[in-house]
Image (cartoon, rainbow, N blue to C red):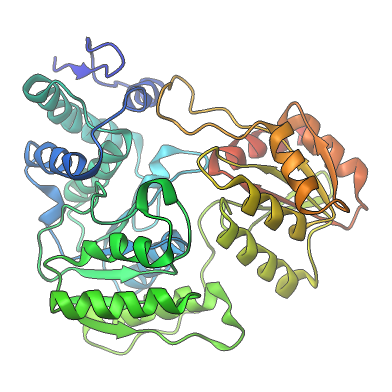
Length: 428
């Protein structure tokens, strides 16, 4: 039987044979620091070559940006499926199930398909460990799973959401010249990796347009982003299609406008008008438990938190009554705290764990007490409470708000996953 690398020890283990083993197998790739930068992308290219370069099999839409990538990828997938096509979609991160990262036609693949793909990916990972002494990163493995699962399903198209940046992202390995690059809204995030200005970050993201003939630009909140995209594409010789902003700047409507533009460009016909489809988990997701309304949204930086506030004002008439938040340590503490203070008059802070069985490179949260203190500095009038668990955070939020109040749950997607488990347990 083939063996798989155990990145934390260098030893080999058998590939996953069932759902439980798959989770353990996948999480092992999070237990080490994979190569970064140009080396990381080159490593991803070599890894995919061992799998037969599945990323180059079919026409692909590659989505980069700071906010809205996953929503655009999801809505575009829905549009293509509605036109009778089959689509493999890569999205990141997941909320409840890692298969959210590699769906077919917007649905989770069955476990037989996943385990077969994992065995194939496992052999490639073993080859990389043997020849380079290093295993692929968690993100590179899930991206490879998407392409291998899509190949097994013989899909017509691939829709790929990038991770951080673009130039050195593990998804920036597609060599087809007919691919379309979509640039979603760009703002400040991952400044330690991408640069300290919107211009710097835009340059890194739009670098994924190398060898690409067509780029679709979503409405941009920062003029510097639009100007930089135009300048960079002129230098590269790529064509640009700009999607205009909508009245009211509703990010959901604008995301669907971008998806419609790509649909028309790909299929050579006018876009369909199917309306806004339900979004994937963790994107303004409404959850009703024990008679209370919760909105779960993975707004993990200032730009996304501000967008969530605009959505709440538009949909519910005002901010939330209370917010339960946990923010990753890689995020800017002060700006996130200030945005949380605008989101609700009561902010309950907590912390999230990493994926079970993973250590080392998985994101860690800001300590709940530090996040609460930052909120108090940003807005002394905001009431803060530090919760020692997601269950106690839920209990406090219910006790501190009226029965008809909206409670927002936001921050890291890892936090959302744990909060959903707490809400499910409370409803039993």
